[in-house]
Length: 232
Image 1 (tube, helix red, strand yellow):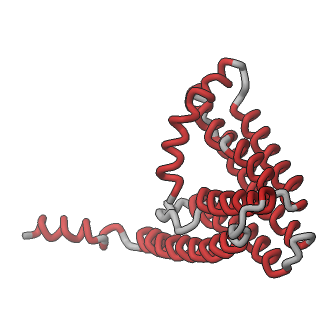
Image 2: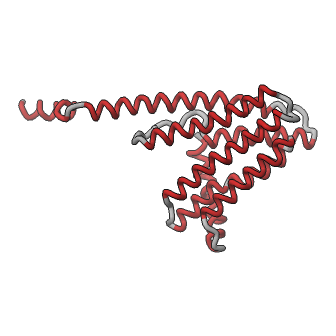
Image 3: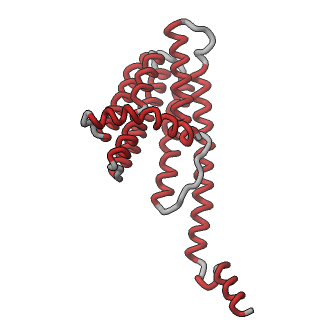
């Protein structure tokens, strides 16, 4: 849901920066790789040590590379299948690092096995949610549903909560350390809902596509209507 509005806004904001990088001779693929490396480093260096605030700051600085590289490719007129593949693949790597970082924190000094399990579930369910859409599209279906919690929602909910929880831990602001557990549960439940929405949509679209292929050409409603008009 956030993709529709947030992407348009941040694309406009980041266009000058993308143009600057192009003038400096930086390629979109380089931005994609550096952005993913920054997210992975922020998640796996800071989060397992409980430094949620600074980890979130680092991740946030690099996560916008997902918009910058696409903007650069459009400005250069170089949109390609390889670029789309690389971007999508590295998005999964970045997401895994973020939720993996949460899981490592709760498995260690965070000392909460339940939230460790929830973090791992968020990691796995996010991958499956993305896979259902990619797999549906690969067999020729539109998968015409966004779902309740897509990647943008997963990141915003988790990172905002982690940043606020880390702010509490770093600066002693009371009452907001519970936000990350709440956010992880929201992402977990929302991912399940989104997965169900996409599976149901793919099932319906597959049934419609199979019915259209199986129906004899002369028996389609359109052709029947034309035959009736011709004989009347």
